[in-house]
Image (cartoon, rainbow, N blue to C red; front, top):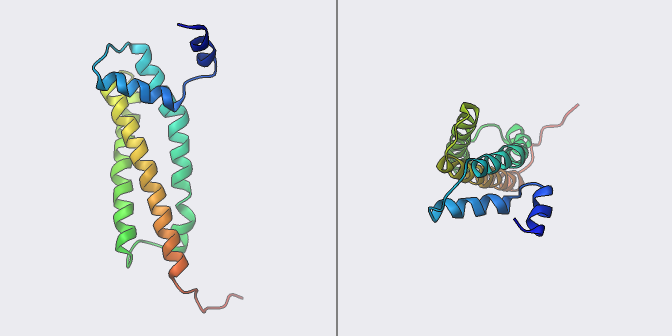
Length: 141
C-alpha cells in the first residue's frame, strides 16, 4: 500500500472505491473478504441513508397528489421504485445474514442506484403533475 493509499484509507471508503470493487468482480480478480465487507459497509452507511432521503422527498408529493390513480406515468414510476426497493431489501437481508458474497454486494449496489434513480423519477414526475394540475378552488377557513 502506498503512502497516498494510506492517507486515503484514513478518510474512509468512497463510492469510487465501491465501483473499483465492482470492476474487480467483473474482471474476475481475486476478492478478499475484507473488500466485500468494506464495499458493503459503504452501501449501508452512505448509500442507504442517501436513498432514505430520496424516498423521503416523495412524501410531500404523495400527500398532495394522493395515490397514482389517474396518473399512469406516476404509477409506472412507483412500480419501478418498488421493484428496485425489493432488491435493496434483499441486500439488507443478506447483510443481516452475515455472509455476503461479492456478487451480492454488486447486486446491492445496483439495486441501490436503481432505487435512487426511480425515487428521483417519481419526484420529478410528481412535481410535473403538481405543476400542470390547476389548483383547487376550495377555500380554507
